[in-house]
Length: 95
Length: 499
Picture 1 (cartoon, each protein chain N blue to C red):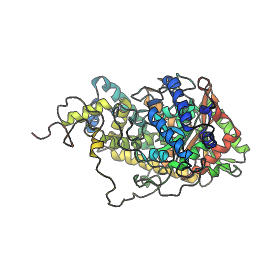
Picture 2 (picture 1 turned 120 degrees about the vertical axis):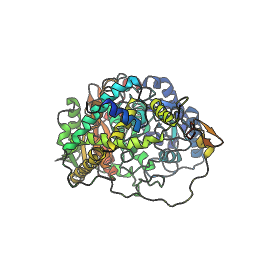
Picture 3 (picture 1 turned 120 degrees about the horizontal axis):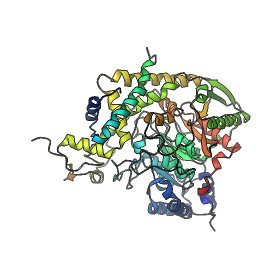
């Protein structure tokens, strides 16, 4: 097993994912198999090969700094789980 | 008197019928909605059917036609009304204003998009009528449609089999004649593999050819929107409308859009077709291989020349993909935090608990695995060994293709290693599932256009011929596909229960 329980616990925390206890063993097993599988990349000779940045070698285009959208807060917040006076509500962060 | 076989006609044929006044868009829309209602249940191909909206849009198309506000149908250049009154369905990964957009996930179970994706906007502006939103693997992560929160889609050719994935609802609904066409997305084969497994035609354009705006992101350097249809001609018609520069997608390419339909008629005389030897090695089902070889012989008989080309790093494409795609997905899916939209866990203890439980509950097992794989390969200490290494190998793979396309116009081979497999057969083994995309993933890594066209049967299940072109080579793969379809009738075959 290329990954152990603690490593997977750490990865899950970095990814902000709660993995249910009953799913945990299976997650460790399958993630290990995926990591083993992609490990074959280490055999490839990539000396002096530039990492690919874009499939068409294009550069990132910048748009004009212009106002293009109107205020649609009401529409957008219809999908919010909890709002008040146009603000998103989250659990208390600062005591 | 309305023909009873409207569902059997292609988009191109339907456009002609509408133009000649043989039937109206409302009649056509009603006929297909009735089929979806009667036959769609077994397939589970739809997450949402937008019957009322469809009928209203069809009425508007009919009114526009009556008033003569219409272009000439059948011309593959963008223009108002090119698709006037023609029905289609959208994969539920495309945002549709005022309509549920779930991406196959519990996370977005109740998400109603406040805007339209560019693809949706362009097709609607051309007059297309949306019948509904199709089922898919959750966040497009899967090759069997089994990772959908809304349950697997079934293959119309055999209900025990998968229709492929991730655009499985799109492929199944086109194969079952519930719609003449569907949109899809392809990150590693998600249009072409389901097209192959259902006997439909599936086109993934060049990276950047079609806007990704409003298409829920999985792996942004690989994702591309395309179509599943019943002929290459129909794919050309739709691509002409969908393709083109979009300021709202920062990776959209500003290149003129050719008239894809106009180029279909040219013969294949002199077309140089490359064959990759490794594509026919062990791993390819015998009957699939035989069907593909026969298809190559047809192309040859039409004037194409076959030559062998080498893609030496092909074996590394699947592991490369399973580093790059999860890395990008772990970043893209960080937006689902239970705060602004999407699922939120009940009674969170604190903010961290809110994030972790909302995401834990909202995402299914495969999506969680990919997010964690991506997090791992990007994490401190592993970034160079995995992510950077994969991007280097990706460069090697792209160079292999570039070299091959110096000598050939098109690369041809099988789309998938086997015909449709049974639901449940591969879902417990991620690696076996991932290897389904072995022939298609290279095109995504290199940003190339690819198409799958039906080329025969294996065990009474459809087989796909895969054609890949150089960047912006959509015209030549569409032309080769169309010419092949003039010579063969595999693409017209229909599963008996849905005839």
